Length: 172
Length: 160
Image (cartoon, rainbow over all chains, first blue to last red; front, side):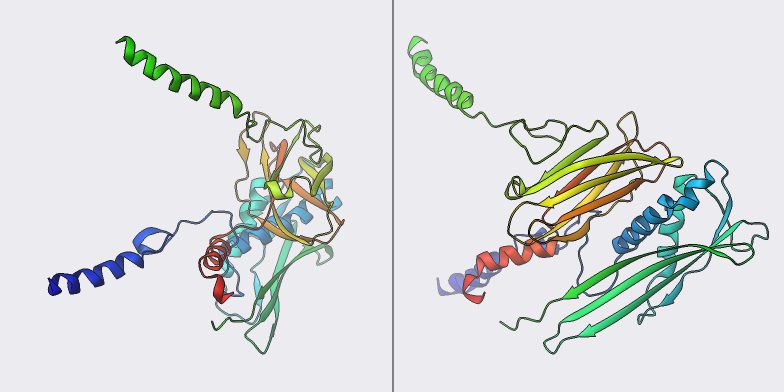
C-alpha cells in the first residue's frame, strides 16, 4: 500500500503542474500580426510595421503622387545597419520594404546592378539605448528613407520610430 | 407515450422562453449597434471596430476621410479618448477591394497612447491600386505574454 502511495504521489504532482497554455510543449501559435517581445530588440513584425508606416509616408508624398502611372525605375539601395546590434536581419527588412513598394504598382523596381534607373532609395536603421539600475531598458529604433534622383539630388526623406521599453525585473 | 410528452413539454417550453429572453445583439464587423454613439459608421468606405466593451463608450472613432493619392487610396480616422483615463491601445488597418476581398495582407498591430481626451489621427494608405475600403480595429494591447502575466497575477495574488 505504501509503495502504491509513493508511486502515486509523483504522478499526482506532475499532473498538478500542467500549464493551462499550449499543452505539453508550452509552445503556442501566435497571432501573425501580434507584437510580442521578449527583449528590447526588433522582431519580424517590427520589420513589417516599419515597412508599413514608412511606405505610408512615402506613397502619400506629393512627389510620389506626381508619378501617377509613369512607373519610374527605382532601386532600393542596401540597408545600412547603424544600430548597436550587428545581428539584425537587414535582408528581411529590405524584403518587407520591396514587397510593399512593388505591391503598390507605382514603380518599376530594379536590381542594384541595373545601369538605367530614375531614383535610388537609401535606407538606414539606427538605434539608441538606455539602461536603468533595475534592469530597465529603453531602446529606440529609427528607419529612414532617403530618395535621390540620378544626378544625386535628394527629393524625399521619410522616417519612422519604434520605441521599446523593458520594465524592471521582479525577483519574487 | 402521453406521460412522456407531458414530462418533456414543460422543459421544452422553458428552453423556448429562456432563449427568447436572451436578446443578445448580433455581433460582427458589418452589423452596427444602433445604440452605440461612439463609432461613426456612416462612411461607406470604412468599417470601424472597437475591440472591447470597456472601451465602447470611452473611445470615439469618427471623422473618416478617404481620398485618392495618385493611384492609391488614403484613409484618415480620428480616435478620441472621451475618458479621464490614460489608455495604451493598438490599432490595425486592413484594406479591402471593391468586391470586399482583403488586399495587402502584411498588416500588424500598432501601439499608441491616448492621454485623457486626446485625439489621435490615424492614417493608412491602401498599398495596392485596387484597395478601396478600410477596416480599422482599435483594442487594448493583446499578446501571449500580456495574457500570461494577467493569469499569473490572478493565480498568485500574494506575489503581486
